[in-house]
Length: 542
Image (cartoon, rainbow, N blue to C red; front, side, top):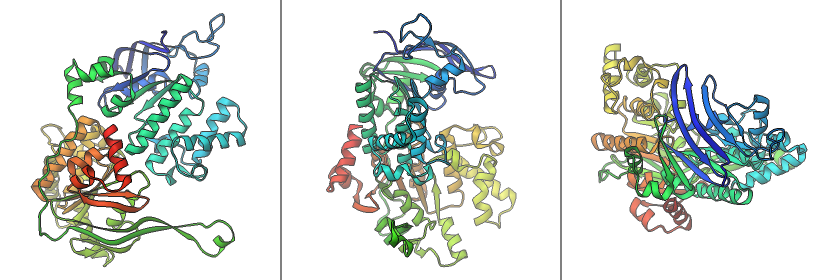
């Protein structure tokens, strides 16, 4: 079978420095090829280069694409043309229609000023020539096909009004709008829950069978590759070091780098939590609700309420991890924000025995006791601040009595605790976040939290944006810090494997309600609620 896309000798360089070194690969019509590797291996640059979406890059090589109608005078309908030498005007007709792309971070890829329905409809108006009304109706159906609940209402929402998973599904709907011949999917399920991930994979497979669509999947999720791809190409430092059928490569990997990727599943290494100790965090009847408009005349006089968290009860002992698992929109992050005292709530939340709202001085002391590590270290670390300023910022608030020298000593100690030293990184304190990898930035975020000696860390998806090998390292770091410091963790995640590796107790949430709560082995190995069984089954299948 002739290739739909045949790439030969692809080189990509920035300022004379090569980042992709003459790679070769091909994709047949209807085939699923996974491009696998860690951050910095060149996966995303390779995909973006095919559509010449990389700025200031020197791109050479050949990328013959056979999917375009009217490929040239005297040529057959699907005669191949080189994407890398095609005029820009012609390439614009290919982007989005013949070759579509799903980007990794939907919040930056979606336009914050337009509703998601308008953004999906725009693709249909531009490439399919649909009227505005027809495009809007088709956009709602596309959102429904990707598993978004209440698609008509969500179509009228702006990106910031959707959860991370819902934004990713809207991005997928936009990419699939014109039924492209080739889909470039850059980490398309990273932000999705295991059950939604299964839905998206089934959707992509269905569309592929129906329309003969080929997929180039960019990912670091090896379970996703096992389940979805036909062939896999493994990239390391801009080179493809191994490629072949998924079963062959995963069953008998030939390259040491491939073997290291495969051996990167989370490992459980936690000590039992302290028994009999007073909890570092407890909540009783915790409830969070938001006002929402009521349609019709009734809405003139009062507002309704959307309940995001319904009467949650839990506690965390020193040295113990409470995992909170559930799909996007289940209320996990809202629960975390309420326990941090960042959202109005009813019920009781006590940190080290003290409730929020006792006064400004008292609340500030609680913030020293309870720190947070966010999901995306790149957006949570200020690009204008140095490492010393970022890590030491908490000390200026919570330990103002320290002078500059004492503060620097504490900062260096916190950095050393997370494995970052000036021996490894000369002029470490004067560096900026962009000078570090994703895993190193997450270590900076952990150091920033640790520097004030907290008793509890709220971990909001701390590894979901990381490669599998880096994820394993960060989880190992958190496990070591918990053993050494007796830290309590409130771990928010949709990854059941991370829960198995880290948690002592687990809460399962759906639609703001706690459906199941108990020891991690009991809940995950003998789930009682149908929803928990569904989550566990999806994780095992994944």
